[in-house]
Amino acid sequence: MSRFKRHVVLAAGCAAVLTWLGAGAARAERRPPNGSDAAMLEARVREDIERRIVPLLEQMAPGQAELKYVDVRVTRPTALPPGAAPWTCGCQLEPRRTNTGRRPYSGNPYRYEMRRHHLVFAVDRNGNTIEEWLQHDRYLAPPRGTGLGEVARGPHKLLQNPYDPAKHIWIVDDDMHEINIFTNDGKLVKTMGERGVPGRGPNNFNRPTDIAWLPDGTFFVADGYAGTRVAKFDKNGKFLLDWGKPPVDPKNPQPGEFWSVHSIGISNDRRIFVADREHHRMQVYDENGKFLYLFPTGYDSAVLAHIVTDDDYVWVADWTTDRLVKYTLDGRYVLDIGSHGPLPGQFDGVHQIDVDQEGNLYVTEVANDRSQMFRPKKGANPAWIIRPMVGRKSNTPKPVIPKV
Image (cartoon, rainbow, N blue to C red):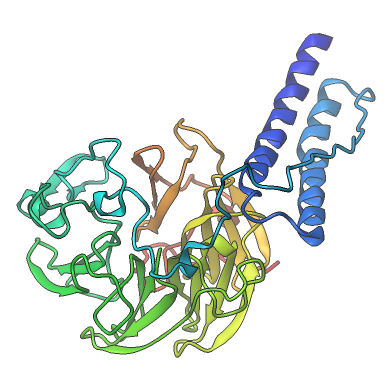
């Protein structure tokens, strides 16, 4: 191999590392790293270089690879530009801001037209459309000029209670502050929340995002983008309790303080795992809202979704790195898979994760505008296979994997 080609490989490796660092730097303006964060980031970068790049160079040029670290300091302006307002955590604004600036009533007109038809459809395992709920398009995305909901962007998540034999479809709509429950064949049976009316109460949400269930039908709502709570309901939808509040000090958030409660899951032993997205951490509670512990999900991470699997692991989808990351239930990092990009097998903004009874993995990406399906390879290392969520029936036995 020529010297030129060796340099190309090295440059490609450096680019991967620098791209990852660049994403962190771009987001760090919101929360400058403290000393421990910076040290952790540096240690991980060094580990990646020594584990992935150096062995590759040694294979191509035995005895010629030399590793040197250069200390690069980046200075940032300490003052805001003239006339710029200081940044404030959105969850602390009074009155609360209940939208993200996309809607006309926030004072900003749309900059683009959104798709408002064919909102709910089903496909078979080969990706062929087998059912559409066109009859609900006007309800889920009312035409412009028709009143409340006319400026909503459409459903945020479609979910199923894994313990429900009737397989009802739950549609969480954050913009309309609603949760709509349908039979599996498309009949609306219940609406929770008040359309267009944000709030924190027994029947009001503030941009809800996700739901998780216990075996008896009790469920927990992650509420949400603008709300800062988890709300618990019985199987009939009766409000039981809630917990959570905005951070008193956004630079030093405490347990029980949230900013973007974006995803929620439940373990076999009924622990509630709550993704506190903008605080870059996972908070863990018992089923009555008692705080148990928390763990970080990576420096400047942005967890859009997570799944607690039946083999007692937590897999999170991190938009900062565009990887699916595996943790033990107590928050120890195990491994990560995937990379950023639009190619098959790459990710950009994984917003939902699920695994069917045959072990096939499904991910939906908001930035790549698609869903992908992955089938486990025969003979694959079971540690790299994502199992179904707790409660989901599975035709594949749980592998015996030594705990790390």
